[in-house]
Amino acid sequence: MRITPPSSWWVVPLGELWNYRELLYFFVWRDIKIRYKQTAIGAAWAVLQPFLTMLVFSLFFGRLAHIPSQGLPYPVFYYSALLPWMYFASALQNATNTIVENQRLITKVYFPRLALPLSAVLSGLVDFGVSFLMFVAIMIYYRIHPSAALLWLPFFLLLAVLTALGVGLWLSALNAIYRDVRYVLPFLVQFWMIASPVAYPSSLVPEKWRWLYGLNPMAGVIEGFRWSLAGKGEPPSGLLFISMGVVLLVLLSGVAYFQKMETTVADVV
Image 1 (tube, one colour):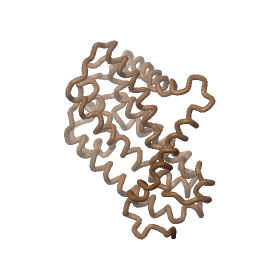
Image 2 (cartoon, rainbow, N blue to C red):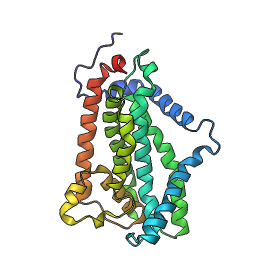
Image 3 (cartoon, rainbow, N blue to C red):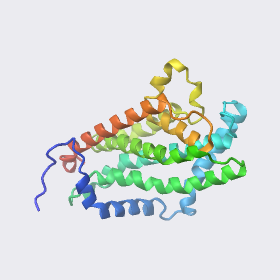
Image 4 (cartoon, rainbow, N blue to C red):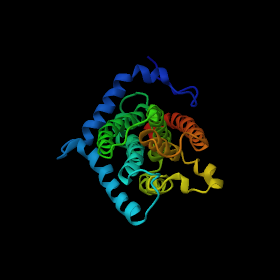
């Protein structure tokens, strides 16, 4: 077998990833085991983080600042937004650091490097599933029944996964070359959360700036989660279509840049 650099850096190696699917599975399983190794409460952290953040947001932004909640109880309003946001922030951080953290493995054996950020993004879905159970309990407590809009939830979750993967590919490749990225990442995540409708509804954004707000792909994802889970808020509209276009652009350009960097990553990491 002869290992050669990719002939076209804009072509996604789907066939190669499929051949290494077992390795991808073990990467995902390894990330999950390491995340909760030697922790006192284990996977309960996936529930505590969004739950405690929801309590803080409900108190300060809800009870004190009286931010509109689109007719929803504040815990439902904030937790439905924190579900995709917590997943995105965690997956983005893990994907950004995955190349540097696995530098010894990269320099010793060949495998499609794309499997590393992909596994980091997929492993976050386990935390998402655990935290989603808490949201179900909150919905039962407030006696909110899901509507037919719930059928859209897998689509919005896929959009969040692709957003985390696209941005993670860019940042993981840049972090392998410039270690400054890991210092910029916390600020980026904080700024991105403020620029997303997590603590407020997107209806507060003036109509003339709505197209610019849609350039943030997580804006459409978060509003979509609220609408599909709680049945309130804005259904899929122009904001979502703009976000979808941005996600597609970021994902394709991220794959292309990551593929281009893959030929030299073992020398610079």
